[in-house]
Amino acid sequence: MTQGDERILEFLDAKDIVASPSVIAANIDYTGEYVSRRCRKLADAKLLQRVDASNYTITDLGSAFLSGDVDADSIKLDDEE
Figure 1 (tube, helix red, strand yellow):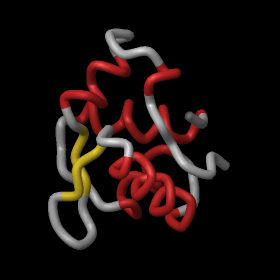
Figure 2: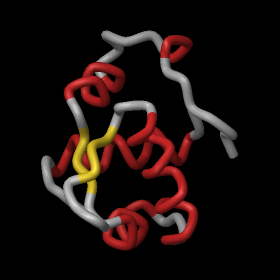
Figure 3: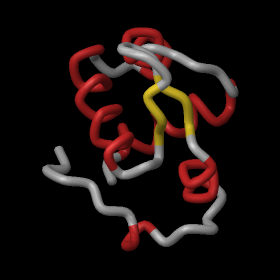
Figure 4: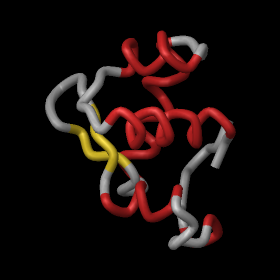
């Protein structure tokens, strides 16, 4: 889990919206390319859900992780950057 991953999750959790990586990136000061890659990884780990071809929302697991109810060691993210 990277700092960027946590910022992505925190943004979607706080806003309670469906958003594209470019919208997320504009709000958390990371590049759209980076956020797009990390969103795919977070979706693979079930922390985000892909709503359509380009939008994501946080899952219950993602919210539970942020609140400390899920141990970070139990989250499997491939090729962390």
